[in-house]
Length: 73
Image (cartoon, rainbow, N blue to C red; front, side):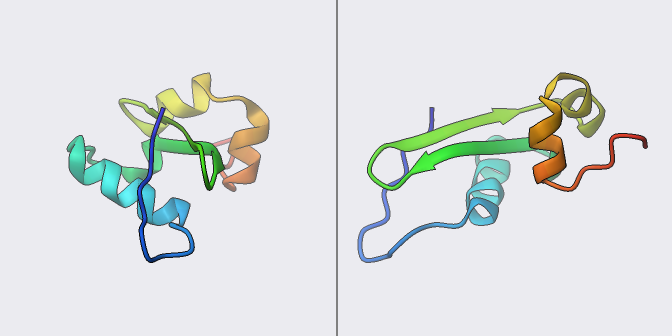
């Protein structure tokens, strides 16, 4: 569960959140981070995988399609 505090800003993009999480948790490939179900007043969820191959294996197909991951590579 991720709480995002952004006083003075309308919203924070998911790409910006992925970059921040990658720095915080020393993730080599930000594509192995999945953030989803964000609501302005409540935060959202995030998953960090060891690598992109693990993400492709365990993430639901609809989330991979949303992020334009090729399922056949």
